[in-house]
Image 1 (cartoon, helix red, strand yellow):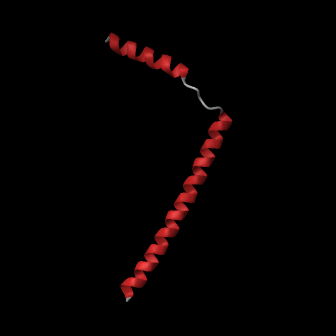
Image 2: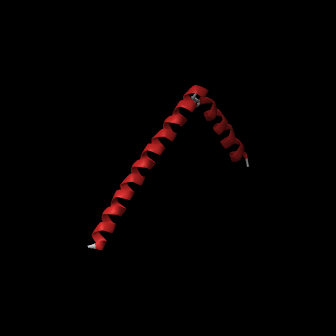
Image 3: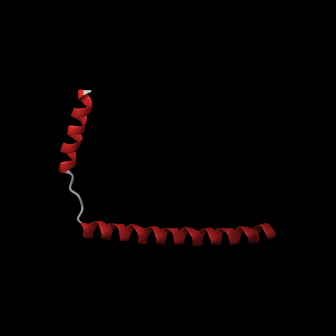
Length: 61
């Protein structure tokens, strides 16, 4: 069981080396991610609507 203790000690040591983002950086990155997700979702939705309309027209013929 000493390997578990050694592993956890190594994890704790590595976590101290991590460069955590500041609160402002985290908020900024989160907002950018949300906006990008909404833009991409909107694009996919519009593309799907265009493809659906095109296929409906083609299937009617």
